Amino acid sequence: MQWLRDMWTKEGPGISKDAPKKIGLALFAEVFAREWWEMVKLNILFILTAMFVVTIPAALAATARVCLAFVEDRNTYLLRDFTEAFVRYFWRATTWGLAFTAALGIGAYAAVAYAAAARDNLVLAVPLTLSIVATAFIAVLACHLVILMVMRDLPAFGLLRLAAIASVLRPLPALAALGFVSALWVAHIVFYPVSVFMPATFNFSLGMFAVAFGVHRAAVMVLALPIATQEKHEPHARDAVQKHLIQKHSGKENWNVFG
Image 1 (cartoon, helix red, strand yellow):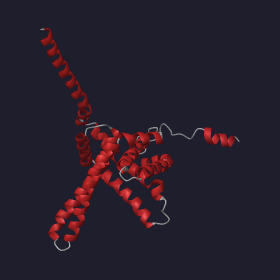
Image 2: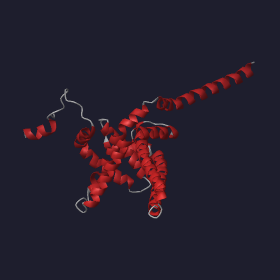
Image 3: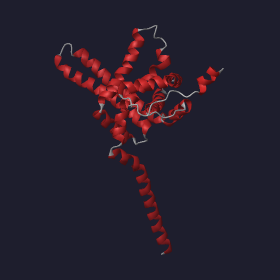
Image 4: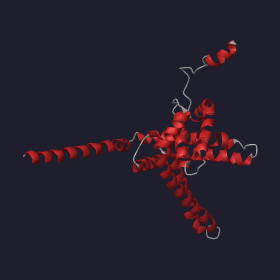
């Protein structure tokens, strides 16, 4: 029975302290190899919580929160972390989800309409290009915003501003992540019915992990900017000013009473 005990208690091979830190696709593959079973369970949690449709944005935010822990190599307690994030970000994620769904829908509709009209009038190729670029930018913006939202509590305008800055500074990793997500679903369609279990096992969680992995660096960059620090401390500053005004006003009333 020694082999059975060693299977559970024996230390793993570990990582050499002198081993170079992996980056890029090598790091992506390493994290996936380490967390693949957690991603399967995370995918199931997403499906169970998103089946009511209106809960999809909150389920995406909760999935993003767990995937961010994978990217940052932090310990996760999957069910607890997922449910806490689902409750914590429910209203914010739902509001942003409705806004981005409407924006992406308008952009996609405009692109399809201009594409049909451009067949007869080449001049409309210009607005067609603009609508495609705008729709792609909105998708990139949504990727950055959801990761920034689960990284730090910020006011809505400050969150949108930082997401826009990140989208301008580093749009390509987010586009690559969206391309990877699209490839997962194309593979599901092309290889159906062999791929029938892909959505149930890892499509959603692996797709969100790709997004978190792709935009994490840009998110860290913009959160280090002075405007992010200002947004972080603004609520405390407002509270301090209000407290000071209340104390000052109360002091004047007391002076009038005793004077």
